[in-house]
Length: 332
Image 1 (cartoon, rainbow, N blue to C red):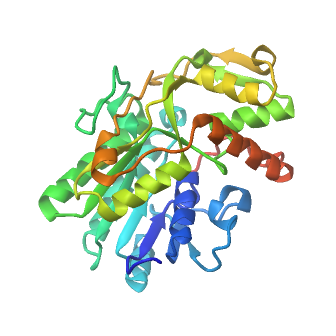
Image 2: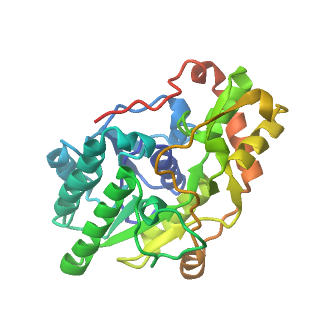
Image 3: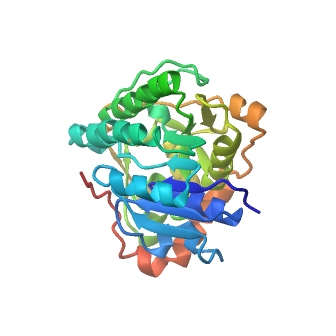
């Protein structure tokens, strides 16, 4: 059964946010979910796949313009925990409209944090941030690594994180941070590499692989990420960041080959090589010992099993996904 903690999740239309809402509901919490757009189709909302009637309620809130309404909701909900997944999160597109990324991820974020520090009863603010703030890593790094952002997106997230450091040191603002490796799972946006590969292969379309897929990543299943996020939200040390990552490194090309192999498809027939994206980091290698030792977390879902989860999800919702937008659609 859930305790007296009352959760509000910002950015619930993201797959990470939607999955965390589902995780909380499965633990018995009543959750207020918010996003700046209307609720997505069921295919992209894991909390609608299971029997959690009434556990997740939705309110449309744009952090760029609706802070007063959010403040009212937090008071009426008597929120103790706010978990923020909301951000302009695309890397390549941040070069096209960098001011939009700065507005959402810096200016609006600072306004949000200033409002939250005045909210009575706030016990934890969980800031879901990104390893992009570190830039490309040469080896496994811990949470003390210096910031070295290389894209407008990464700069905007680093600025937001650094602002929160001052709120913690000056106002005792109850922030904790998570930085996860590449997350994936059923319901993920179709422009992300795993569902994009599965859809292209099943639909007989060519997949464009930027730079030949040389960059190296760790992929972590959303079930494992949600478990980590909950542990940080309830027992993480205030002011601290926690890396959420495994230690299985895979290149994007190897990942695509693995997916195609599980679908019985040939790499050369399914893939075309495109140029590398500007500013793309070669590797993120996050050491997650802190999360494992302090909070007892461990990743449990293998990449192979996780890919099978996404293949099953694509097949389950194939009628809808075939007509769903497969490209990122930018909103200021």
